[in-house]
Amino acid sequence: MSGESANERIFVSGPWVTELEVSYVAEAARTAWLDKAGVFNARFEKAFAEYMGSAHAASLPSCTSGLHLALAALGVGPGDEVIVPDLTWIASAAPVSYVGATPVFADVDRATWCMDAASFESLITPRTKAVIPVDLYGGMPDYDALLAVAARHNIPVIEDAAEALGSQWKGARAGKLGRIGVFSFHGSKTMTTGEGGMLVTDDDALFARIQFLRDHGRIPGDVSFVNAEVAFKYKMSALQAAFGLAQLERVEELVAKKRQIFSWYEERLRGLPGVTLNAQPDGMLNSYWMVTIVLDPALAQAKGLDKARLMALFKAQNIDTRPFFSPLSSIPAYADTDQGKAARARNAASYAIGPYGLNLPCGMSLTEAQAERVCASLKDILNSKPAA
Ligand SMILES: Cc1ncc(COP(=O)(O)O)c(C=O)c1O
Image (cartoon, rainbow, N blue to C red):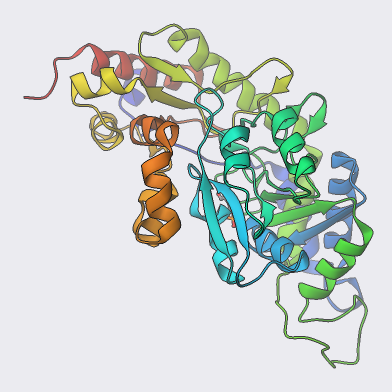
């Protein structure tokens, strides 16, 4: 670290953009119109499907729209229930509400921070129409257990892999574990298009329905402008697709960078008493979208350190962090619902993790010296006396 940059601001996330992205977007700006309007989207979708080993891929304006389409295509609607983990971003649950169904909040596993299979099974009712496991911060739930429960009860799995591009479960890519997988290319993600998303599936009929639903109820190629149903407009622009195509061509180096950044933190923080880092259980490959720490609740309480206090202490050092997601059952959007109240009383693991977790800086331009500064700050914070 150079002297003058010793206290420079460290951002929590950020992309890695090269001349390849810039040149593809410039080409799209010049050419992707009229009969060539869809060329970059088609190239991006084909390349993404190949990368995933999936039969189909649809480029979308967001991952949220992918979840919405998945639920709509599966026919989930009012009166139905969909099981989601309590500890995730609201985008995993909001689309359940969009289609008029009820999100049911399963607890997470203490080690993986992802949906617990036993909790999932305990919440299944005759109204359960889908389950949305989330690959949190690049981690993955125990899919052997989770898929066995889903199969036993014949419940379709929509894998929310928004945060897990490049992760693997026993050799299967994140996003391939369910009937449908969805990804986010938001600006903070490992691979980005600014805003954007992708849906993958091997199911021909479901994909045909998704293609129809995402273009106002039109079959691809339709020029009649006569719509069979009221549907949605969920398409990615050609400029975003061009950007995404370039990022995808670099996906291995993007994921490797994330894993390198995690290794810098791991070397310095592994074994620090009361601090847990992202898990990578045997058989799983974690792409570590967000380097995350969770403090042991007893330590955190003894030190007066919840995530808001931790963030403020880091901010005082010019270091940006992000709070771990709060349990959905605790946030105003869902707290007063019957499912919110029930989950709050039940989901001990979610409530032992959410308040005490923090995402550390892990943007693509982070240097090892900056990671060192973050780790030194964390150690100072943990060694200092509790606030009076
Ligand atoms: C777990 C999870 N699901 C879904 C989404 C939604 O993605 P998007 O912002 O692309 O709609 C996100 C966004 O970050 C997410 O973290």
